[in-house]
Amino acid sequence: MTAPVSYLAPAVRQTPLQARVPQRPTRMRVSLAFVEDRVNVWLRFGRPTVEIVLDRWRRVAMFVPGTVCCRVKWIGNISGTALWQLLVMQAPTPFEDTQCVAGVLPGTRILLRADGEAQVEAVLAVIDAIEALGIDPCTVAASYWRKVGHRLGAGLPLPVYTAERHAAHLARGGEE
Image (cartoon, rainbow, N blue to C red):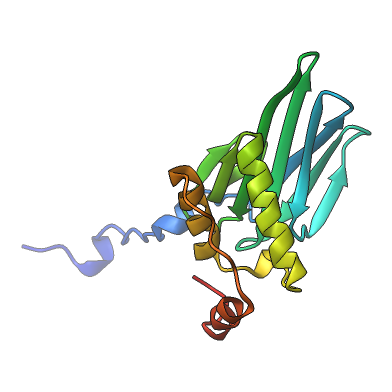
């Protein structure tokens, strides 16, 4: 014999997985610093939505998901330069896989990484050439930054970003 419907346990209502998992912060936070002759971490390009000054040495720049920025890090000591690093990063969307980078929360999508003075100077020259065309480096195709990074790692000549390539990128909707 079956029990009447009124005596059955109430149905358990299930919530979607994304509602149960705590969301990541919606903005990427990039720590910046300057201590004369010791540390200089700055943005070469990028449009932060908010920039918070913590003290006279430290700042935090915040970026909305999808925004591209470039962080340059120089660390020195009494012997001279100890570290040169340049990262072109894209702010992640919630639930997107990210890479851990010191000073970047909750993480980032690394589009290009250059280590050492020669590599950093080569990428800075590429950025200067893009700006000379009148193009904002923040709007450059993410695939181009990846290509520059791969060529840099392989020791091959770096590709030239042209106005035609940029127009094609914008015609596709400016996303990749």
